[in-house]
Image 1 (tube, rainbow, N blue to C red):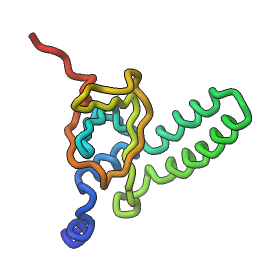
Image 2: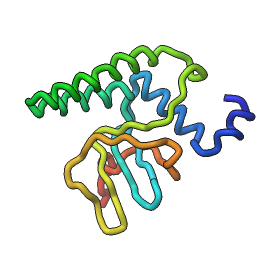
Image 3: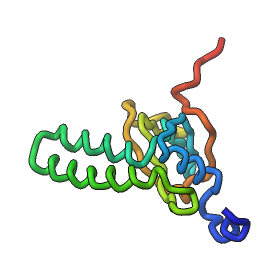
Length: 139
């Protein structure tokens, strides 16, 4: 990305965009995001993997609506799998996808179970590599 492109797109962190691009190529890493005072922590996953898991969750509903939603998600799986071999300059990334995500707020975390999460990269205020669930108490 040129300096001119970086100046134009200050809404999104260019380094976070690069991490998402790497994830979309198939690399999964722990990440913790700060978004307007809320912390979201989980595993950064490829966009196609997000839609694979979403499809599985919809299909598990066991009804016609679930099957229909699963089929719609499957279309994105195929589309995004084709993108993973493209160069960074050919793909615009606008969303970040996490699995096993948890929210942490000043009042505590919620929900207790981890979940699938998708958010806009431009809404992320800051991030660190590693998820909070990976950390252990040293004492």
